[in-house]
Length: 194
Image: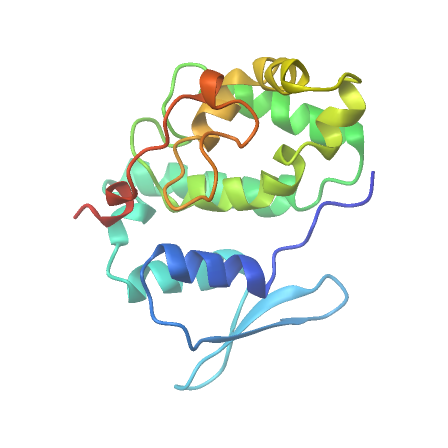
């Protein structure tokens, strides 16, 4: 399996849309690792997925997505770092399998990564795993076809699949493969709570 897709302008544009921000930010990438960059009107550009994403959240006045308490903020930051260091650094099927397994175990008794609150960590983890959850990895792990195959793939990572189903603004219900298992998508109003 090729290295995980690197975060880039497309992912930040999706976040911008999810946050209800007007289009117009200019995104790019820099360096060999293609680190995201946001060109700002007021001084130097911002560099790095977490930095830019947090800036967009604050710009949209949706600070609750970064956590409310000191502990929530720390947990959100922890998962944002996990996304950048582990998920984006994933380079093999085995790495991906371990990441999915660990996330699935973590989510067994939680609604979202930070517990029962929807945060930026959930959004960025979804974006970071979406190419995997689109099933190229699972297709290699579960060699079957049809809707039974999708259900089987999803069943092996049910908690993660359920969490992906709760990301507001996504185009598909659930993880996109098994709406029966994943259940309904949360209303997009989840992102707009104050």
